[in-house]
Image (cartoon, rainbow, N blue to C red; front, side):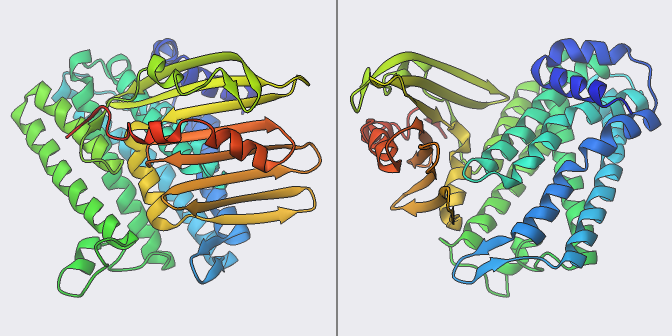
Length: 417
């Protein structure tokens, strides 16, 4: 195995996908080489990270303390998840190959396996984010979304389908990928007993005839989400049967929005608009530079503005404001779930907590006098201040001196049902 070659491929497929897909298209390889040289390594990231999170670090259960899964059960879950992931890649490749003629493409099993393998790269790499507090869930989400985008870019090149049919091809493949993932989770859960029957694996059953969650509880929100996903899936199937490309595009966009907890689409703030929330002066510090950009794919947008502020001693504070667009549904889910964490050492502390309607993250190092203060606004915007300061309150005051009320007033900006 050539590890440096693997890392080079990872870097290029993530940073220069269009160029890399054309290169991959001409490569001569086999299923064995793909598995040994790429899949076996990257597919292990998420199961291993999950093992350490569940058994070593544990998860905090509100009002009940930290829960750790037993080493034996967690090892079994890790191994089975890994094995079924390896099988899932091959099954997904067979599905992509099978669907090719339906979207004007050419059947070729090894090309399909190459497509799925390299498209999954982003999601596999993002698996390590299970350890990252605060924005870890967004990183995982971004990895999945970028893998979908990679698949969208790769299908016309690898499977020779017309570009105008790549959206529908991607959408159908995505739905099947979800079904495969759910099936794998059900098999693993059925063997290890990790999941809760009637709640997480079958939300509808828990709501019909045998009681259910309160409407405004986390369980109730998840149950409502699952019903909306089912409805969006049926619309996607109907659009595919109709053969209407525009209907397929709209159905795919709706499914994407529904998966992210939204009942519409969101056009995030324009870069010039979000930059106005970065003042020229911040708590006596002068702004040295400022930038903003909006990026997106398949209906999912995100706009970020960044600025640096220097004091008289040359110390920098970095400020970042992000309009997360459709990911606001994910942030709302974090609020419903009451995601909280607190830890401290002789060197400093780190904590995540809910302050009113906002999620807050604080991190501080006593030795370097550096830290980070971040907060959400209206479940849509994230404001983060980091750098060297006298204490965490300095970072907090800097964040609160930004026009947060003005940001909150824009929570419905660009939303269409």
